[in-house]
Image 1 (cartoon, rainbow, N blue to C red):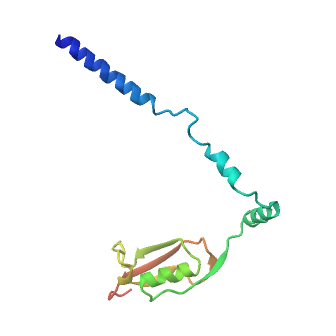
Image 2 (spheres, rainbow, N blue to C red):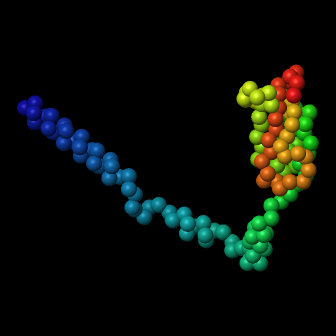
Image 3 (tube, one colour):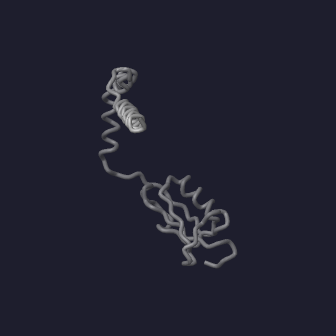
Length: 137
């Protein structure tokens, strides 16, 4: 009797497992076709407008901006200045060589920067080398 009960319980568990797995592949048409809805909801772009946008990206010329001199500023203010000028690829390093992380940027002073101030492409990586406030560069 125990063998039959155990076999029945195993069969029921296997059946439930198979039934649960079967439901993961949803092939029913109850899901809306999102690509069809999205394309019908969007207005068609003017071809002249899209051609002009394509020409702008095809030139390959990066936008340039004036990178400010941020040496002597606290690290947070220096990062804000660089971003305000259009430079968003920023990195900061410990100028003391101890490889410390700048957790609270307002407690660090920028000693040097790469690249130097001047006109650069805005996608240029900017590295700010800083020491903790009160330390010498």
